[in-house]
Image (cartoon, rainbow, N blue to C red; front, side, top):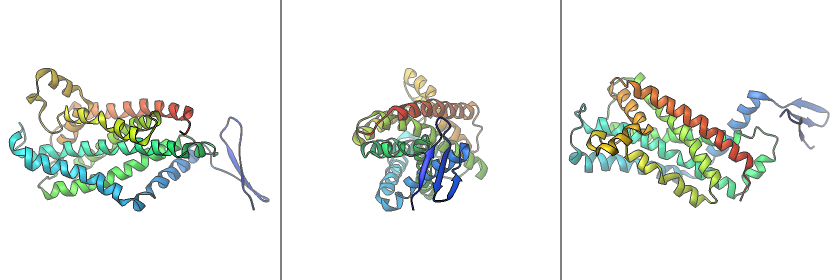
Length: 284
């Protein structure tokens, strides 16, 4: 028995025929959702087979927590408005963790390009943006796992939800939303470079100044004036300030809306650019 899939020209309305039976394949939003979810599951099924990838992705942020809290924390001293440096530090490390986790999107897309998987997927009668949507959604799930591990480590060294559970959930959703936005930046990088190694380097190199020239680890008031101004305009500073305020029960003020606007803007712009790049790209 064979199954043929045909695609109505220009309407993206696939039809499946099998023997005497013919049934319509879902179209529109159902089609997009089904294919995107299938793609996401394709990536998530790989995780249990490569647990070392998840383990090493978790070790790095744990090292940041321990180094800054126990090695640098004493030298940094008190932060205005915070009696405990741990309460100031952890939201910054959470933000850095989910941002660094987005780099896996670029590496994964580059790997699919080098293995010819993109060309095979493009030949199928599927919702084509699902390739990138599925990848970014699966990386959010993986980021959530890393975040939970980080949260447990934070609770063990004394971090507490001073703002209550609802505010903590709000801060977590904000962090993951920002991570999703930067996954699209990484997807564009993965489509633009010629190798997995290049995607790894290009995906990380710009994130270090983005996270360290910010309020993630120290107050921007301790920086030289010109650098402090840059740090204050840094979207990562707005994200960190908003998450820190919510976790500690303070008023996030304009930082909350500015960080939401940044997340939406980055998603729209880079999802558009990555989708256009994908439509023109061929496997290497």
